[in-house]
Amino acid sequence: MFAAIKRIIKHGFKNFKRQAPLHFATIFILIIALSLLTSIFLFRSTINYLVSEIQKKIDVSVYFKQNTPATEIEKIKEDIGELDDIEEVEYISAQRALEDFKEKHKDEPLILQSVDVLGENPFFPSLNIRAKKPNQYAAVLAYFDGSDFQDIIYEVDYIKKKTIIDRLFSMTSNLSLAGIILSIFLGAVAVLVAFNTIRITIKDSGEEISIMKLVGASSWFVQGPFIVQGILCGLLAALATFFLFYLTVYFSAPKILSITGGFNIFAWFGRNIFNLFLLQFGGGLILSVFSGMIATRKYL
Amino acid sequence: MMISYQNISKIYLNDIAALKDINFDIEKNEFVTIAGKSGAGKTTLIKLLLREEEPTSGKIFFEGNNVGLITKSKLPSYRQRIGVVFQDYKLLFTKTVFENVAFAMEATGASDAEIKRDVIKVLEIVGLDERINNFPKELSGGEKQRVAIARALIIRPDVIVADEPTGNLDPYHSEDIIELLCKINALGTNIILATHDRSIINKLKKRVIVLEKGQLIRDDKSGNVIF
Image (cartoon, rainbow over all chains, first blue to last red; front, top):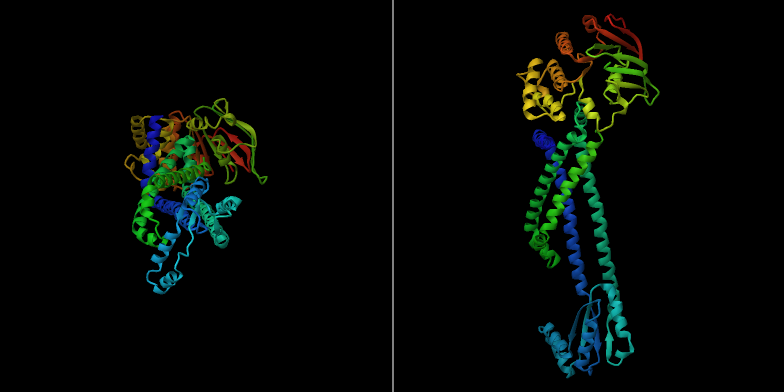
């Protein structure tokens, strides 16, 4: 048994060396397939980052009447903060709203003068509420709909923002769905291309397999070296893809950072290095070994 | 009795009858020539013996065992008892002469030392001991056929089946191959030779079974044949 395994491994390595051009072609196709799979992984992470960034920009502001005590607003803030769907609640006092406004328009004296002319703070204290998902803002609105708060609430700007929120929600959902569909499609393309390339490569060996069977070799003794060759192709393709992506991500990180407004792809690569390694090596091995096994079975 | 064909018929899907009700026996150590024109059914007869194909009806017995009942897992060890030589050599083109011959032994599980010793000895017998590291593409037709015979011989089979082994060779090399087969037979191995070459049959003077359009039309122990 041990001698047979040793021979299978030896034949696998020997065939790999002797049919090097054929195997390099297979490795090249596998690199393309694995690059496609890795790109899907990267693409989906970038999309998820962009979606979460867009979602972060969505919020609902609840404006309170000017005489509402700060303690009461703080109490409401605490109560809302305990809701499951809420990501973040920020209290902005009337004074802070005024300061923020002045800071924002510090280079526009006319606007600052017009505020001074009023003689009093025209801003209302407010709570800026950010839900975990855009579709959870309806629940926030329902919370303030209760009669308890009607006396102190000046305005909830949800209705004003509703159209934008709905659009963004629809856009982010569509973007995620498009990502999933594209991933499935490209993933299937990658698998089919790799499988067919290996199948065609083995088709050339179909006659050799028949000869080996005729001289009395068992199926696994015939199939074994093809599996070894598959493992070698898969490993080399995965290794090449890994370094290819390492370099690509390293050099493209600054550009992607500026395009996405903060997505550091190189840091992401570092955080997900184990998953990527597993995806590429696992993908390479599964694609090459299983394609090889299925293709050789036909001739056994 | 070594091999027995009993009421063997083989009909392919498009109703072409390759063999029709074939009956004959082959005794131990016999040299039998299966003669007939192309398409007479010689190769089908061999394919059925090797269980490459199944007969439509009838049975083949090898040393009393029904070949049709051999399980898939037992098929390799059955085939190791039959050495095969083909007209187109059927060598493994990615392996050297040594490796081609050694492969048949490796499949039987022989040790590396046995393989080295026996392969060199057999290659000496067929006169290829100086070509052990050459690949099949570097050999002449006659040399390729001798590699095929060495591969068939190395596993010490009970029977060597040669399907048109001289079909691609010139008369000089053909004679060489037939002489080799006769020597192997003299050492105690059954030989089944399929050929359409009358000159070879006439020279051999051994038992001839003649096939025509899938039917056995003559079984002549003296080796005289007309077809």
